[in-house]
Length: 265
Image 1: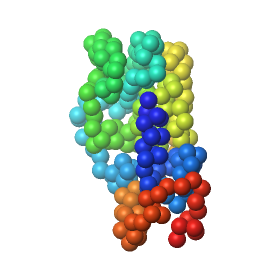
Image 2: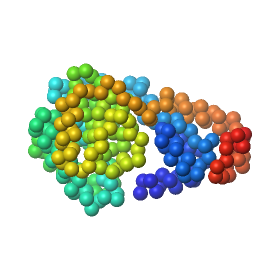
Image 3: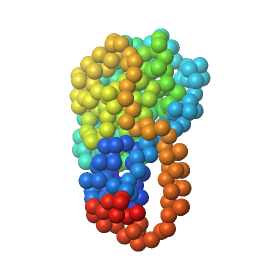
Image 4: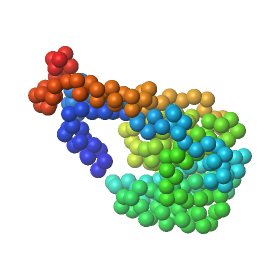
């Protein structure tokens, strides 16, 4: 349903703010005029690059972490088109998490899924996992301040941290921390994925093997970040100033297919 709604919103909009070049091309394929599209970057990255998140010691104390042991951040949401498979999907993930916890003494920080249909199934399975294993903890939400603070640990030389799940934040926000992320399933298909992303299916063995591989391998030195365009806030402010300087006329309001910027000046 997400893409249906996004496409409808795109066709109803006169000005488009995209977060990356791939999204810009997607909007163009929907027949939108190039001059209406602005790649401003991902707004949440402004806070990240400004360093507005919890520091290492604060994170260590809040989550009672042993920074010498591996850390995994896990979030799994429901997929509206795959609800009949939800029990199987979360069970496969839970089996993999249990093995990663037991075999590597991994400290696993899980968060609640979003509030879509079937969320309670995921929550109940994670509660069971938390009860069975001391190194697994479940939080309703970390909030950006602590979530980004956790991801920032991936940059620390002697800390082994990876991200795991099917959340869009894994695709969009882990790259700027050089954090390796394992993306599970189809929920993020079509996203512009940076180099730090590894894709797996909902198979416990596959998830476990990739997790074990990343925990045992060298950290990333640097990754690309397609969602950063030197400040979304700055770019959006510049766009607003440009719009304010223009007359709101038929050219802006009446949308046509394939009209060039030169023709609209």
